[in-house]
Image (cartoon, rainbow, N blue to C red; front, side, top):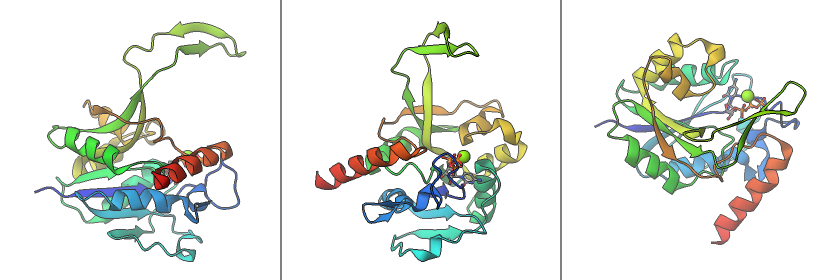
Length: 228
Ligand code: CTP
Ligand code: MG
């Protein structure tokens, strides 16, 4: 039987957030932000390994007490997210047909039911798939000077989230072949092989902490889920 392995790229610097430490290490309810992310993945019974990829120059990881079951650390992060994922996959030592669920460290409001929905919908798929959100708002294309040039139909448009779940060997091949600049998520690397990943409905709360204002929202969501 194929294993389910979570792979969490966490080698970014958080330049848009602009904090002294990378955003994955910011304090959130008394823990580093990505402690919440890793804990959710470890709480999914089907997932046997939670592997976090950090930078070889990372000075923060060892400063915290993680105490998360199934957690492993690889210090093989690269210059881009795709490189971090590719290096992590190469170092995993997984079987080629194992499923790998790649999830952004900065999406800390993921829940166990979201991951279980993805696994249930994708485990029988030939290719793999990802959590994504159908676009709810009206979409505008802008002119270069910030006016509306036209309204774009939102029909069939989705916003990609993570986890993104693919077979280990196929994803590694896709990321090796893919032109790095064009690859901003795992699905786009798979698409470049001519394949069509399955879209599974995610949730708005599974957003990526990117800017300082996002932290208050993440804190509110995590605090309310702990109360409830
Ligand atoms: N990431 C990574 N290796 C990189 C760049 C990013 O592992 N060289 C990880 C980040 O740590 C994050 C995820 O990929 O968990 C999504 O990236 P993003 O939100 O863009 O994080 P950063 O690159 O750190 O932020 P920014 O783009 O604002 O610098
Ligand atoms: Mg980035």
